[in-house]
Image (cartoon, rainbow, N blue to C red):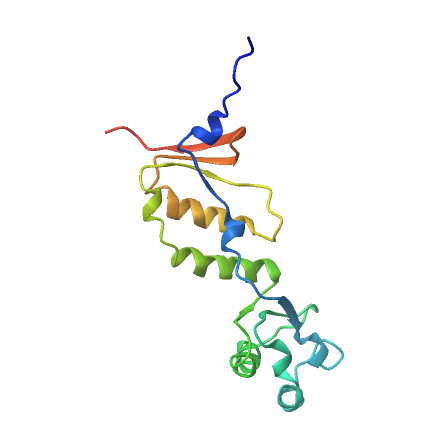
Length: 170
């Protein structure tokens, strides 16, 4: 007589938290100001303002935008601020930095507004192996949010998880 195979993971109280489930929809784009600089290095205010005014900002509707300069030019803060005034009516989010910085800022906002009351005193596993560009910082922000609330915290898959935290007994 064969023994019945029992899926202990499916029957456990373990809750899987997947950051991908909280990934906001919308295209991520990089806006490089280098193209508006003289020889890619010198920002001339008059020409820069002319380029900004003439640009079709509606192309950024509902997009997440990372403002950057791929050359070694020093870009004053007002230049990024000016571009943001044009993007603000269209883009979902604008940040200065690369795509990873953009994703970190997006996840910071998502996690700040996330209700985790249902995870209180529960064993939680944070799923790894993301198919979407989840930055490392998002995992760190998640730990800061979950640790004060959960009973245990692990990373990976239920069959091969890495223990991270266990709430001390009182």
